[in-house]
Length: 271
Ligand SMILES: [Fe+2]
Image (cartoon, rainbow, N blue to C red; front, side, top):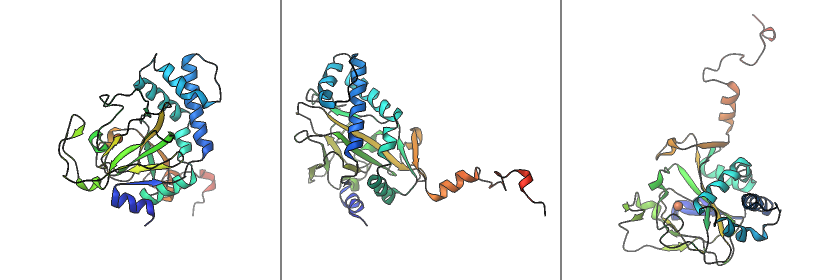
């Protein structure tokens, strides 16, 4: 068992360290910045220095919710999420964890944390919750991929081993019962690494007091052969990685294994 698997099993979360190149992170940051510049009617630059400033300017015109939706869609349309999953170390670790038939939830939403987010805005400053409450099944894994994360911004707070407590009773998006003793930890992660946790791992947002915005991508992944233990069947998943078995099935074209389906008739000998 590798370290990430071990941590996931015992603590309910793990980190795949240094698995995304700076080149790809920069490309994603630039794409985000360019969309914001475009919406502001500015000249498109390839410089992300003003990303946070641009964001605060756009927030005067659009809600944070709308901005997050627009930006997530853009990353999907530009195939940048697909590119993320092509990163060698990330892909190898995911294959080890859930097998080689991988899909990701298309309808994810970029998580932006800015210093203006108020504690009462539950949507941006989430209290302790399990993804299971929103339909994610136990067969899936939640990735948390930092895109713009600097020292002092904070990350997520996770309750260690809470994935072993089952479905936690909840109301108004927060637990109504918790064990008397538990241990919360702040996720220690930097740009280029990817955190992952189970659908039952309790976690919450740490407010970002930095002048710049924190950007992370919370993306759900699953092996598309695993049975659904949540509401996964209601969501749109995109297949991005196939095993040998799936490749062969696709090649054969149908489950009846039609003989010589792809060979011309005159190339087949009657015996
Ligand atoms: Fe969450």
